[in-house]
Image 1 (cartoon, rainbow, N blue to C red):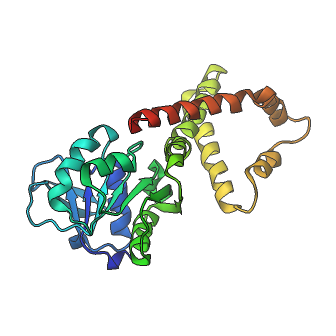
Image 2 (cartoon, one colour):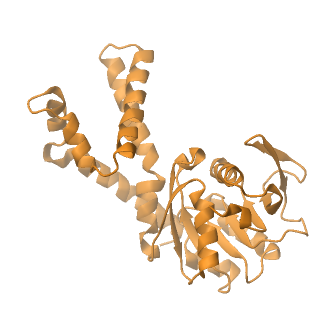
Image 3 (cartoon, one colour):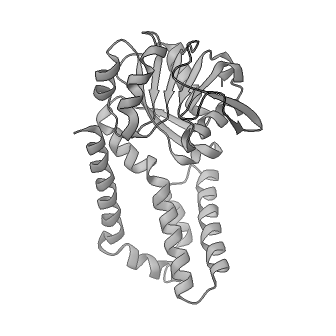
Length: 274
């Protein structure tokens, strides 16, 4: 990773995802003096990240130079943010947006066609360096530009570039929202365990540790398919098979998940103004 070579990096937003990115960057060698954070707080405030005190400034600061500008703000306030960043960018600034549903067309309507813009969709495991980020740009990037953006996002997990913007809302529904689906499944197991008579502590421990252990198995044995992992747990005529016969009957669970993903995509389309 070449974060020590990056100069004049600015991030707008220091919420959960913004802090996750900043933490990953600092941990992987980004010089603190090359990072500017713009937040809602008044100038002079600071945040503590990885035992480093990082100062927050405002849009009104006149000495901000941005080779790369990361927009880590909610989609609902993106139009207002795009107007505010005009004074701190020039035509060479690379803009990276992690806001769900905000299209290239929408961003370019505010800042024009000269800048290279990248849409990025990370997810919350980025907070512990286990994120998955998908990247798209509507303009060709040279090797230095592409490597710089890749390194920034690789600091918090895996990175994949795609060549079509129209799949970004689906990617958001699968990967961006995906952690919540797994958390909810774990929550369901916890609730069922309690309904069947286990106490809250044991219900939580069984469900959470099973979730963590299963994910760790997948990570350790990446050459095995998810289907193979499932079959390894499923003995013919056993208890797991009895449960899966219900879950997999007529693809009921898969159909329900499909509806959920479609609903997330539709919400992304609304945020995109489509």
